[in-house]
Each structure stands twice: as C-alpha cells, then as structure tokens.
Image (cartoon, rainbow, N blue to C red; front, side, top):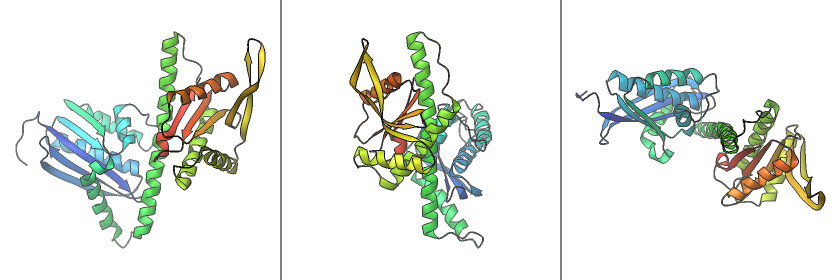
Length: 319
C-alpha cells in the first residue's frame, strides 16, 4: 500500500446482497482515491442473511478498512436508501438485527475527521454489485448451496421488494413525525396525542396490501381498478373495508346534501385515497387532510399507484 497523508479523502462504494430473504448473502466494497483511481476491493460471503444485514456488513468493512489504513476522511456511496437514511439519522432503526450494526457503525464514524454518506442509483454502483454477485455465484456452485439461477433471481427480486416496503413504512413514520412537529410549531400549539398503536398497525397492513396490488398489476391502470383490488386484498386478510362512506358536511348550520364521500375506510380508523396520476399535487394531500378534519379520523393514506416503485407513491397524512 503506497504511503498517503492521513487527511487524504477516499471513497468507498458499498453494496450488499442476499439471494433470498434471508438467503446466501455477501457484501462488496470498492475503495477509490479522490481522483477515482482504485485503491482496493473487499468482498466476503456472509452465509445465510438478509439483504439489509449484508448492506450493513459492507458499510462496516469500509469503515474498518479506512481506519486501519489511517484514512480519516471518508465518503461512502450506497444504493441502499434505507441504510443511507438510517446512518444519516433520517430513518429510525427498529430492527433488532440491524440496531447493533448501526450502533457499531456510528461509533466508528465518530473516529473520522470527516465522514459523509449518500445514496446513488444502482446503475452507478455496478462495481460493488459485481463483487457481490461474484461471491454469491462462487458460493452457489458449492455443493451445500442448491439454488438454480431462476430461483436466485426470484429470491433476489422478493428481497428487494421487502426492502422497498420497509423503506416505505419507515418513510411514512418520518413524514408523520415531521408534519406533527411542523404543524405544532407553526400554530404555536403543543403536539397532539400520538396516533394510537392499533391505527398505525392498520396503516401498515394497508401499505402491505397496496404493495401486493402494485406488484401484481403494476402502474398505468385507472384509479377504480386499484381501489377495487385494494379493497379485495384488505378484506381477504380479515380487515373491514367500507367504500364510499358518506361524511356529512355542515355550513352555517346547514347540512349539505351533496356530502363528502371517503374512498375507503379501513377498520373504521384509516382513510385511504387511491390515486393513479402522473404527479401527486399538494391539493391531493390537502383533500385528504380535509377529509380527515371533517370525518374526525386521525390518519389517512394517499396512495398513487401510477409509479414504478409503490414506496414512492405512498404518503401518510395525520391530523
């Protein structure tokens, strides 16, 4: 290893993968100098693990490498939005399996003079991804690992879906907390009582169902198809679903006959507004908020199915 000043920055491109959830897993790390020249590469087979576990192992490997070689300025790039947002402190780390890894990473990060981490698209992280697949391919050829290529592809796809779903749920928690705080601050009021745990649980089940519908149908269909299929999916899993629930609207003591109707009301606690639009506008969120205020419910989900990834189409609205 050539000598270098301790303040020279380096870049670590990291990736982790699991062919199953859990399944055979590995990480890959590409270490580069600031000028783009490759300094080293790291990879390791992890046995049976989840995709998120593998991503964190890649991060830890990059941190250990930098500290061991006296690089005190490190920039990490990863295509795992979940990992990046958790390390940045923007997402909570609730998984008991990931929490110790996150804590270990934070302790190591504190030892750097300068550290940053950012999310990059998968197509910009191909070198690290190639390392992961090379290790998994080698492990797959061992006698004790028996996956066909088709099985591996199906498992990897399923694991990515699980990751996207986890990111969507965590993102909803963030949005809800940020909106509560912002609203209380702007109105000079204390934050309202938190949403009951049971209501949050129902909200999570709706997100699960929306994910299954979108995975099966994809984007591009009309709104009513998604609404009918989502209601069917929720009922199939034992949830009560009401469609077109009328909410009385009063103005100046007058009850308006042309009242408000809620698209879906799940378990008499969560209002769901399915959409299939090119862009979700602020007025769409405002409409859900109005529905909540007039109906007296606390939590609503605005779900736009016309997106490549359903996690990008889900927004939680609370009052």
